[in-house]
Image (cartoon, rainbow, N blue to C red):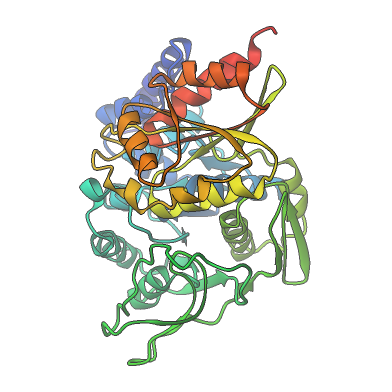
Length: 445
């Protein structure tokens, strides 16, 4: 088995190198090849992690939260294995370990921070056996792949129960996530925001409006956004649990700030949703036993990358790239864009490849009418389903330009825009758009 592990690591690293030379990500191929050679490679390598293994699950915020937790642990002097690129199915998880291993198949790591697709937990958990699960939230996502939220919750609960000692670090403000953690029987730790911060739009989609315990309609004293807020069931008494890591004095604007456990946390990001991502990572590093004294230093240096509010500078234009792949996430993206009151151009690229989900009916649940603001100089729709996106915008009486090719759309807005460009893409458009922006950033003016 040792020889098979060495062979798997060598082959995976070679495949990854070749793919990178060809300008491709190559992560999933590396994992796929390693599993072909040694089907037990994940168990072999993950068992070498000296301390603890974290997995991060949830509909939105997985990549940012997982990478932030990894950076926080590294800032504490720990060596960490992490699937930074967000490749979160079995092949991507395996690749994180084989690409981090040495040529003899030895892994030098204190911790592992692994983002895992919810449906893929069935394939990942048997070999990984995590010590902690960070659960961000549960929203409707890719109906043709996941179905309704109940299906995702059933998969997660089934897999959580297979690791009964695993602690679940859960967003207490999400009734679905909190119920899942509480009902699983596993030990759990909570984080959240106990007091209202900003007014939530009345027409937002509210998932999980009914109590998972008894079926009665939940009552909310307030919402943060979507179904996140302070809830209780008038019938059976199910309610938001007590919050251990509670963010208060939350400020949202050009930067985010809040206090937790007497520490003042500041981050140069936009978007209220990022308060939850930062708080989740903080709860993770504290649960690992660290005091979190260096957490603020980490945030000052942390670059989200991977298309999560990623910043580029091209010919004098500031470009922000962000992933938006479901109604709740898109609404929070729009909210973050609108916090910038300066004139701006927007490109929205929508694909319907298999990884995106071929059902794009979710676009009709996004509050695109919020983009009818005087600060928006132009909106361009792009990607495979640009015509569908143009139709969606027509129904809220917002004029758009159509350009199917994303690179062409970006170049046009760089040339005739206002110097402030937001590019919002769904999943399969993310990597290619990132590469386009990197290439353009390196071009001579």
